[in-house]
Amino acid sequence: MSTEYNGYVTAERVEGAEDGPLAGRTVAVKDNISTEGVRTTCGSAMLADYVPPYDATVVERLKAAGATIPGKTNMDEFGMGTTTETSAFGAVENPVAPGHVPGGSSGGSAAVVAAGDADLALGSDTGGSIRCPAAFCGVVGIKPTYGLVSRYGLVAYANSLEQIGPIAPTVEEAAELLEVIAGPDERDATTRDAREEGSDYEYAAAADGDIAGMEVGIPTELLDGADEAVVETFWDAIDDLEARGVTTHEVELPSVEHAVEAYYVIAMSEASSNLARFDGVRYGVSGGFDGNWNETFARAREEGFGDEVKRRVLLGTYALSAGYHDKYYQKAQDARAWIQADFDEALAEADVLASPTMPVPPMELGESLDDPLTMYLADANTTPVNLANLPAISVPAGETPEGLPVGLQFVGPAFGEHAVIRAGSALA
Amino acid sequence: MSDDSEPAVDPEAVSHVAGLARVDLDGDERERFAEQFADILAAFEALDEVPETDQEAQLANVMRPDEVREGLSQAAALRNAPETEDGFFKGPPVS
Image (cartoon, rainbow over all chains, first blue to last red; front, top):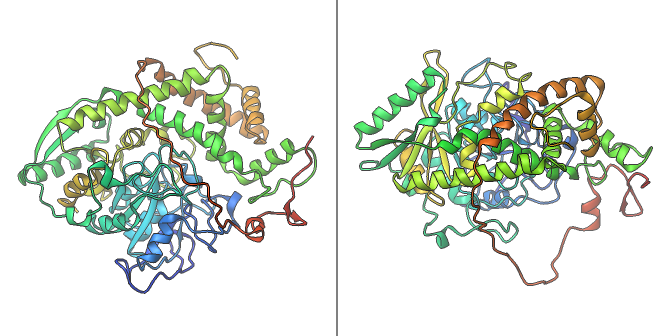
């Protein structure tokens, strides 16, 4: 089942167990999540023929819960992009805003849900890659607290930042899918048991829309510089929430002004190390057998990697190289700690924080490819959350006058998925 | 490496890093990346304004008993390799 908007890289059905909470439902899986016997390309020519010998933990859990996997969804190469245009398998078009990007990097996952070609989908979010496409396609996406969902079988881009999470038409359905995939896994030592963190896994029950009395903080920094139509749609949604008993106050998070730089330095540095494994020997594009191994590896990587991946691997290598480590990587870690402290403080006075998910509406296809820095800056509102390890949800908030979807993001305290789900369920 | 605060990025510097990262680039890529890297690194300069911040390491060792478990079979492990020989991965010459 291919789609005219190029949502799937591989449309191969995998049937799950007969019974379970997801029986009778289809859950599309982002193509950087390993599926035994079904190729997993990461949107890269490097892995065009790679067939994993095992399932990711989340895929095992989907199958056990009775889900049918209709296919593997298109994505920015290795998750590196904000538009799903860097895929070696071609760009994805936004099914609800033709001529525009679906957001990225989980653009295929959001697109198949928005178009009704899958009931639900899994994405991965390193710096906004679930929330951005959810916002741009008018659906719901949840980035879980770091450690809530196992990353075993997720092809690593930046391990310290990324989480797998659900994309769905409604908050309640996203919460149901989160219930299936959340929980500790001995094969991912960074997972934690929510029950030992003062929480539980009853997420769907929190999607009750009961927001009266909720306190919502609004970080002013995340509205500064945002597109006017986006800001207007955001305030309309906040007015709606206030009419239903929510109180709001402005908060200041001065550290988040540095989130994009800190995110890109950390993510690129981790990527330069993680992607070193792609040398064309155990899997991937071979560089042949002429010359010494440095030469053949460099040839394999020239051939197998696209532009954005090369950019990030090179910049990450640079940021970690002798003489620059303290200037870039260490300062980025300082920024990360500062951002975490700012969020802790703000969330001591609020149940959740609210902002536009993206500062801009969906870009036109092709608009941002030649200008990587502008594309990076579009991640201003999503990257702080990954740096702080916190949970966040993006829900549809309305449309611009041109009819382009606008998403609203709620951020909660660590293992406070219930709070962002409850707040989100008032809107979707 | 220098301590200059302004990163100078020319095609030769891009080539040097590409060598460290084991990625071949053609001439066009070197030129284009040099321009883009100058912009991106200039934006990263803003990190200079970040104050030193205490970082609480929330790290704990996660261990399990060292028991033998079934792993991938040799055939499954080799299945994605572009070339194999006598049950091994085939790599390029080391030298």
